Image 1 (tube, rainbow, N blue to C red):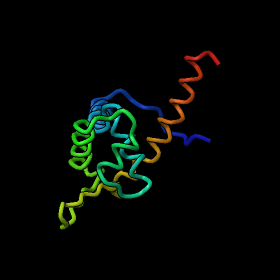
Image 2 (image 1 turned 120 degrees about the vertical axis):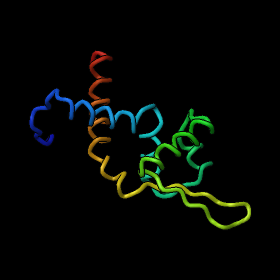
Image 3 (image 1 turned 180 degrees about the horizontal axis):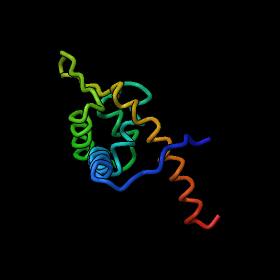
Length: 116
């Protein structure tokens, strides 16, 4: 059963908080990248293969944004050639409820718009 929350208010603080969240998670790819990394650390090529349709340029940009926002950790290993691995941070785990709520809403929305 869904967790009960107090009614949301339309005040400056609420609007700013929602804008901050949307700016951090904007686009089609960031949540998909985070979900992919929930399975454990991955290299760039692994992510590119797993996330269908993302270009290398977009994946690189999104990983940098996620790293800037402390949601992904990038580790460079001192090998030749250098190996780079990406992993989700403990801070990113705070998005678990958000991602579940978006999944549930997306599934409900698809049923509504498909008429079933």
